[in-house]
Image (cartoon, rainbow, N blue to C red; front, side):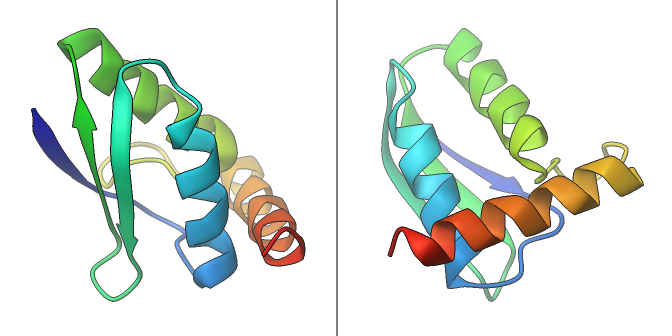
Amino acid sequence: MKNTLKIQNLKCGGCANTIVTQLSKLDGISEVVVDNDTDEVSFLASTENDIEAVISKLSHLGYPILGDANSLPKKAKSFVSCAVGRMSK
């Protein structure tokens, strides 16, 4: 099933690269696309549990979904994820 989540802290292509790379590693997740203009991540998930795994992974990377707590440590993690994504391009 196709899903789209609106996320926080998305800044650039480096962020998008990290998100695509990391979410694509999750079992049951495919066709990950990040839209920097709308702050959205779209993907195909096999089960509801897979969607929860994506939400958890995004939060761990520093990109919580819109409406979730966006603490200073999460914002800092997003900068690290962004830098890693830029280096691995």
